[in-house]
Length: 639
Image (cartoon, rainbow, N blue to C red):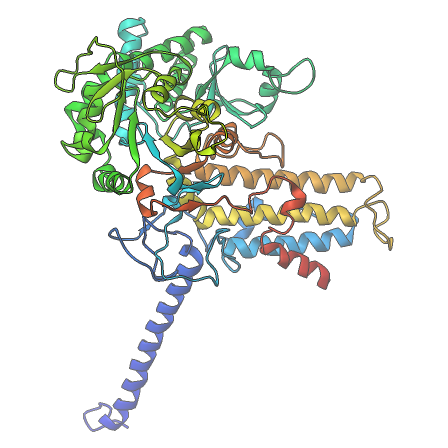
């Protein structure tokens, strides 16, 4: 009712006002709820944990660092129309209704994943599950992973490489090496001066570790664990599968080069410094191609490799780093490295550093990250070691003056704490420290034998730091693989999970479809023994193409050109295998982690166990399937 002034009376306004307020509060609550659900679907696995943080959406946990960091490098539009994505449309069989029923259910399942309606969690194999404890959880990117059983309590000696192990570098270092190597090409190898301005600079997104350079063709290649080339770039252009097959065919039909040919042609790029070599080679080759300048690939490969090497051996790179340590050295080491070293030292471990760098360079960096008294933390300091020859040669040590950095001439008969030594060999190290691998005369006493596994050595380069130490002397090896941080972030993101689930569904769909294929779809018995029809093969081919497309989408989330350092892109429609780098890690490395400082998160007598779920044969992994496949099986059985 309105009063005489034309306004509503208070007794009529109040109920309407209450309704308005309640409606507004309900709308806010619904918005909050939808936001929470959206975050749960689209972002719960985007949550990554630095050190000991736990995301509040996941669980409670201790905090050691500041804020939880969210990875948003992969963007996926949950509101996108599935009809616009060709990888979400499965083929149909022209004559077989049973196959079409499976395909329709698989397509529905794939679309549910794409739209966020279905998002099964990818729990780590060692997830605690119901075995909850009060201990702080270590994030995936900071864990130490084990290929074999390692008991830190039995380790008497812990050794470290320097570059990218004790000290980590910012991307600015590789950018600087690129520019200095480019200048060497122009000034010392008479390359066109236009390279100075027309090459864009170091591109951290181009290459990954574990590649190889073909010195005959200047191709940059990814190798599978069987030494088969799966991806190759000539300059910045990717080679076709046909070109790769023609270049690496063998007379016996293996599709790979013989061991002798591989050794002669392929040069591995196994450390982070080698990423500069790959990028500069690709850029120079591409520049020549675009300028239509004829060039000899073998000469360009040699020149680029030599230019990068001279940047190291000339000392230009090292002097630039020492002049501006803040610019080039990561701050993580300053926060945590000394804590780790003191933790190991307090547990009675013998600590050593074995580096290929000169003492003045190592000394500057270690003072920066650990303080002026850094050498008091180490029992043995070896510089200019010349690895990997350090493991195979028989050279004597020489003492280095810690005051003048000059090499002394007196013979070295023992390795004293507080002193610095250069050159030498692992055999001489074992002799001077009495770490003999031979038994005493009393062979009946097993304690008289030195066990090489009591030495744990950490480094970033598989072949320069780890392989020979483990193979020849039985040392326990630890690889520092900094790419683990990025790859675990990516694997926790929704786009990567979407691709993973979809590929599982497609592979399972391929297997189930063949159960229903044959010349007589109406037969009561299985048709799998009969040859496939033309329509059968067409459906299988299209599914394999979809699978290949999803694998490429997943790989590009790691690196747009070469994918993951641990997996190769499929050479064929459905085949993807461990990379040669991953194979070498499994074969030659006992422990691996993203940073050496991660060891501080474990006790000094921690025991690392390899995962039992990492199986290598199909029949052993039948139980370890993606839970999303149960939906496809259930839907198929309901039909």
